[in-house]
Image (cartoon, rainbow, N blue to C red; front, side, top):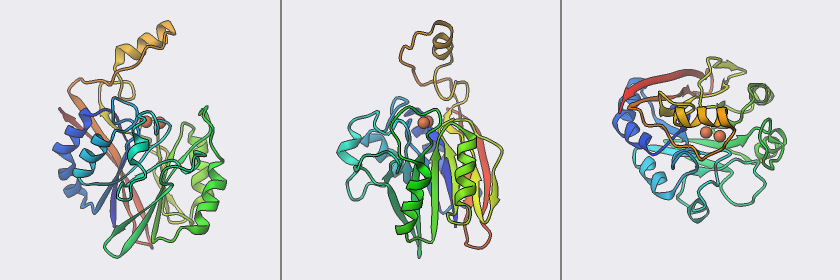
Length: 256
Ligand SMILES: [Fe+2]
Ligand SMILES: [Fe+2]
């Protein structure tokens, strides 16, 4: 089974970019199912129900989030609905939200898990390692994919080696910068970060001048998502078949 997993989608402009190009990427890589990190879709922070529905209608089967999960408060109104395929970080201590999402494809079941790293994150989070240990006691699926949302490559890689052989893939998100360290160990696929679906001439998807201004002045004015007319779609293709799983990087540039 070939899965396309897209890195953090930054800004609603990217919905149109995906509308124009997702199908051709799916065809090129013979993709069966698409997942994406959607924590930055709506004005760069969070995910409204409208944007969730638009992305779903493009054929993205399920979504994971991150530190911006609750940036749009309306997520509380729709994330727990039965048919909503939105998975929030399992180690956010709240009881609300879906912590494991089961996605069916033909006769196979994929369990999707979202986990947050704790290094450089200043929100309350349970231990991602122990949280995953506990989840694995209950998960019954053919494949298990974890989107590990965090800053530190060391923490992501430690999580990967700890759970290698116990999950099918650990794919990183949050830095919006694709790494070149994709590998497979004990039949578990890994990449520190999948990158983003965002504006090419940007700083992690945001307007360049506004971010420079923040660094120069120390004044934290709200950032705006960049819109320069060039976009990148980055992510990974996971080929999971039970015996010899593989991972390859996808990094495409388009005008929009
Ligand atoms: Fe992000
Ligand atoms: Fe993030």
